[in-house]
Image (cartoon, rainbow, N blue to C red; front, side, top):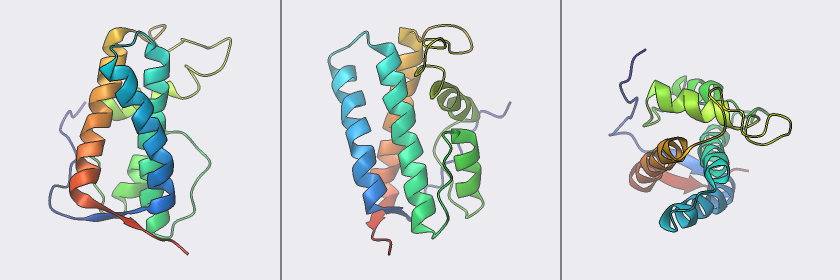
Length: 147
């Protein structure tokens, strides 16, 4: 598997302000729990996935694309890449975030990442992924109003 980051470090990108504002709540949860060194690993992973998902959907909306009602980060990243938007995550990080949504949310699958309940190492990957995307958004994204 190719582990290169697909970051596009020179091109600005628009993110729908509505989605950006919505994603901010998930970002704040992740940052707060990380700062507190919380052991709520499932919650950290879930909100990390949600933050990235909402940023990707905000990019798609700013490109006037229909927002799919999916939670698959792999698909959303691919959709963005079709418009030349390169998300600063490795394939492993993208796949990991895609594995989170349903698997940590609903019984009886709660805690059922492919390898079991989320661990500190999983939360660490989720936190680092959020930090990478946030840095990229801060540097290259600008909010856009979508009609």
